[in-house]
Length: 175
Image (cartoon, rainbow, N blue to C red; front, top):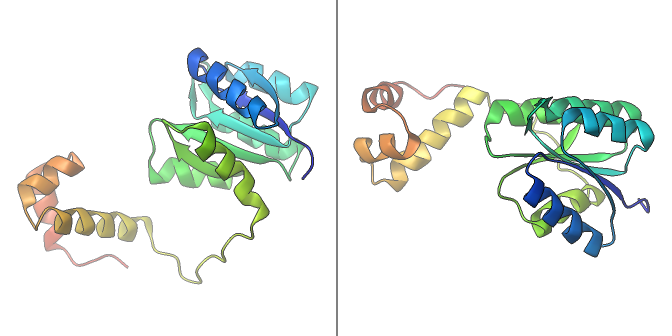
């Protein structure tokens, strides 16, 4: 893709300015927006090849901008940035057309690597992917093991009540 047009949508003005400068320095033709409505207007004027969009904006959800980007230009590579990462929003972002999902704080190098990763072939999806319950259970088990099987410490690290954790650990692994 020779088109280096990039739209950055974020309501954190200092971050928006820094990221725009950094991406311009890497050869992108950058346009910025500070809200969902400004982002949608920017897409109507010119639909970029790349987009970096904050998930939570003052006037709504960045996923609205991603879905409009993909509607207007299916080959565009959009990345969602968020300070509130969780599996459900990551899955939703990808279903709506986001190419990747990065947790804040992400620097320009991370963002460019994610934007350019599209040039490499994506790995095939597993025939039988793990359920969200299984992914959660495995994450809890990894944290539990890293805490030397200390339930109280694991509960603290997972920000979970100790009794809730004990109930989860007592159950069999979900499929």
